[in-house]
Image (cartoon, rainbow, N blue to C red; front, side, top):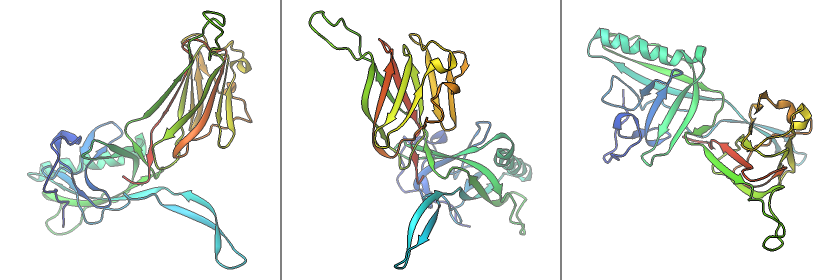
Length: 320
């Protein structure tokens, strides 16, 4: 029963739980891995001095996301790719559980079983991979099966192992730290003082936003008033959505008031509650950000000092 082995050199500044040094994990490399249950309790998975830790043999599902490819036959032979669909990910996670005596082992075994299976009743847990560099990636997981002992002689007394399968509805790893982008209207000026000037009070402007992840992300937008109408355009696709308070009988955003637009799932919250009707349905497209740089334009009618747009997203990655 091989266990994950620690590297010869470790980083004392490791971001993992309790100063646990990184260990070598199949498909990942050197990292500190923690399971976070739906209640927020952290369960170290790579602490070789603890009463439970992951086993090297049998770990899988931590690499690139699985895909289904749809193709059409080509008249000259072969096929042409028509569609690529990311599929849910399954992570196989073998664990050794032990205790100083039978009572301690039983308590540990039951506690870990509950930590995983409660995801089926309370929502997903998180598998967290922390690198010695300080970067942290996570993936939401649900318990699928596998919390069974080996059923062999001498097991189930002071130690046993289980091979757990964790199911991930989204196959991509998510950065633990969000990326934020802030754009603010310029200060309004008098056109004739001290010389003819043009302020940026009507158009917040064209800009470039960068998705640092491997795959597209669905951002959250926060608009801060004053503004009476807001248009968001992705220039490479011409996809647009408009937030118009007048369509729901609102006068617009006053100074400091905010509207928050979530793109996945679609949700709009403004002063007083639900503003989903303020979007220009059915033409509205709550577009995602692809990897890399994207040219976008934020247009705020009725903008003034303090008018701003904030974009927030969590980068998503193929691998841990």
